[in-house]
Image (cartoon, rainbow, N blue to C red):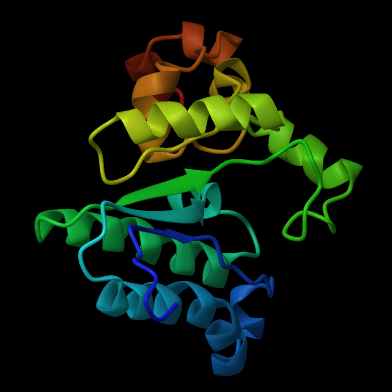
Length: 195
């Protein structure tokens, strides 16, 4: 790039090495963290005066995903780093993408059961054209982190898992259970308990 002016940085690197926490060795953590953390730090130091600094992270870092603690941490770092750059008066936006409809390197191992689990949890796949529209909309906002994802709010509201704190305002209240026990006043239920 010698002699070529760099006006924008777009960081899209990522590596997966999923596993439950006890199985995540320092080497496995490093495999996933390095392409995100080290790369964005290097780009930050080398970028100079650019008009745009965009990083692609993942919804896994925003909501958490079972078996992806290392990947979630790497992506949460990118989101926080965009905030750091903005606080320094530098351009930055992090886009924690949701699931794409088109299978790519990061989703090639997702089977129908995985996609079904995500859908039941309220995460729906993005078509290419929808993703590009969300990219344009995100770039028009003046925010360090914008989440371009397709969410099924009804599925999130009705899921058995707790609603992620960041989505509670979008989801609103969950339907209340109306079983027989909840129809009896609390004081009466407590009085009926054995000592």
